Length: 86
Image (cartoon, rainbow, N blue to C red):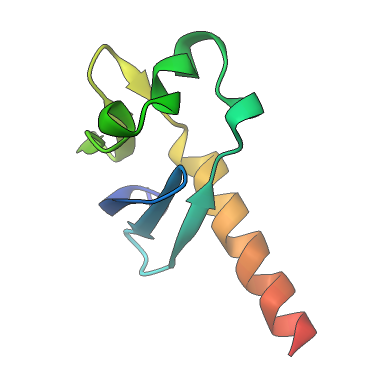
């Protein structure tokens, strides 16, 4: 799908730089309070930095992954807000 992740780079403060199959790229930021339940291990920077791509999704060991379509919508929405502010 066009929202498949083709590049993911961990950045400080629970942020991911992502690039999607269609070329859209941007950052996805996580607040600590969002990282609960199965996402709780992502609070640890050393674990968060172990991100990799699994079948088009940002993933971590132990079967943790993020929905690429939701990440795509967030990045696209952020880009649209930045354009409107310019």
